[in-house]
Image (cartoon, rainbow, N blue to C red; front, side):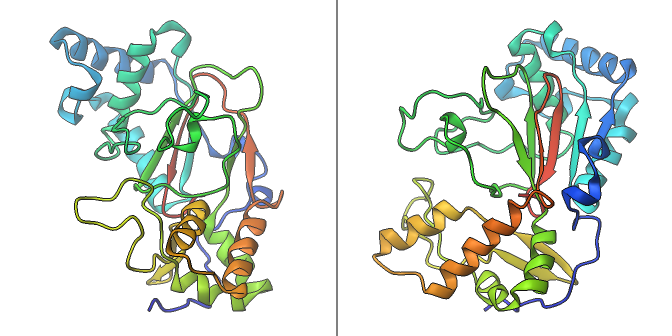
Length: 285
């Protein structure tokens, strides 16, 4: 069983919206030299006739802005965990070109992973009306609860604004830990113990639809707190199992959600076309 961590975390990843002040505090301004580097790398890809699914790190080299990319990576991995790059001239690019450049940038932060059971390497956040029961929630018009994804780094690029809605919300899971420690410390034990998860059709060969093990919402090592949290998959798991969560478990999960959604905790803003966001999926909801 995971050990419950009962100390306040003093780290840049434990930010609050009030502490940041505004979205400007996470922005990194890119200049023409950055765009020129991207254009040059794209021309190399286009000359070789590579498709999105073929582009890897070695195909999209960016030596002239390598130091800038490294600084962003370090901020995402070991700093506050969230950076908003402002911006890429997507209005001047075809959608295919924007996709390849965005993917190419991503290859400098890690190895790309499939978005879902659908196998899409690059998902489009657009309402398609819930036609596929296995599709991710970003493909319908319903609001998403604050959560983490099953990878190390999340990337988002705005191509165009929606007619309505589309606001982004981000919160520090580490700051949520600190708030719960101060206000309701008894809720930390079930969060560190964790819950079984529904795999939502993404189980491997021979795997059950629900995890046999408990997945901690919060974990700690060497004073560094991380998070893995998708509330819907937890409730879905216990429904599948025909088991009831205890009142304390439900209260702990509900309190976690409520704290994360407090105005002083969550950073809420509208991404503008061309803005690219990178976030640490272990610390940022």
